Image (cartoon, rainbow, N blue to C red; front, side):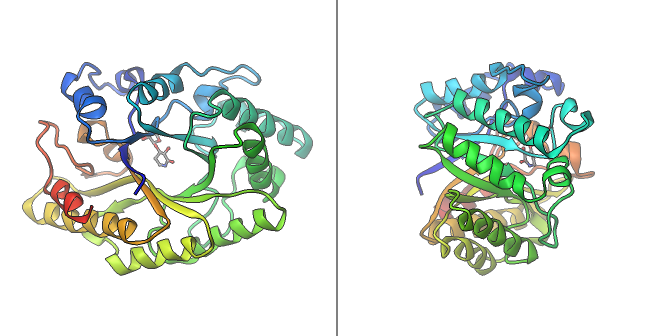
Length: 314
Ligand code: XIL
């Protein structure tokens, strides 16, 4: 592995979520303990923050985490250029023609990738373009441009930040499925046009009580690596039905061990990123009812048994 890291949010984002930003202990683990060699800004580089009104770019939020990463000598993964979610409202309300949206998307990808040029190990260029059956999600980009939007985004990113690895990133790619086949089609779509794609990001938002086996993970990762792209676990968390109990925490440990072990064992799986490490800062309870405790540190900063599972797998 090149890195084991954790995403983190800027203090402003945590405050807006009603979470106390002044956790000295959190910052100590995140930036100083040596636990993590890589980070991803959880929110600050998304369209909503980087181009809140058309043509009006703002890199403040994304810079908070990016500059700390640099100071701490960590790898930086950059996230995410073209995504249907956390879009600025103007993107969804404007009356687009293919020509105007092509121009707006090209401009967005270009300006954002240029801003961080040379500083990102990798960019998530397109995020979550697929439905579970492997067909394209009906985002504004797909509705107006069809699959051409994926080419537009990767072409612009390659031009703007030539040294960064360019990734397609999505969830539910951690065991073989129609969706993993859909990603293979995206790789072919780009390559047939001579457009560079370097990696596939497996978000790895998993479920403790119903997790894939080691072999399923290995098959999924190899399926991509065999095509000559690298693979990373980009947003790893493993949620459970709350409250946490010895039983579901043991399942969670096994699940972390499987997925981390698979990445370690397959050449071509180059890095692992937790989607934050501290349970109170996880997105899970906001989105999945009665689920949580998905990360490796509890609220009182004691560690989940899954931490040991990760160490065993590494
Ligand atoms: C989540 C963040 O963690 C939350 O803070 C935010 O409110 C919503 O987005 N897939 C992705 C991530 O690619 O960007 C998402 O992050 C989680 C799902």
